[in-house]
Length: 175
Image 1 (cartoon, rainbow, N blue to C red):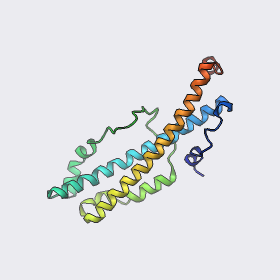
Image 2: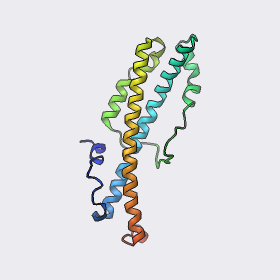
Image 3: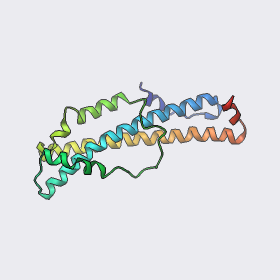
Image 4: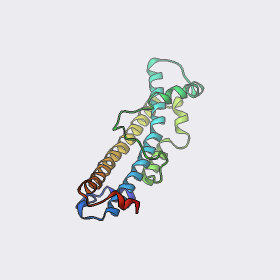
């Protein structure tokens, strides 16, 4: 069982009020670490997805293109979607400490072996399949991220509740 699977267990958030504060903090930190890895994987799929979409647009407009043209356009293509709509959470770190090995293997299978460099030579059907596969992967990762956001929020709410009620004190952090 991966760390992500363990942290997504339905009973993870059961009876938080009775758990030691150190355990709640540890769970929150682990959830943040996994979410950071998911965020990284999501960013890693967005570039290839943008490249594939650019090639689909190029073909739909009838503009001739080749790999050299694609490489020349990469700065523009990759800069177009640098800010996505989302919850606007500011990550505590951009470098993941934990990557889900199953998802990482799945992403490698989608874009590995120089596959993205071959988009200009793919058939329309293969390009559409790749776009669909990348979009599905991005959705899967995003859904997992949202599940972790919910857990992080619940764990943070429990910590906040303890400080507000006096069950925990800031002084305990300093000792």
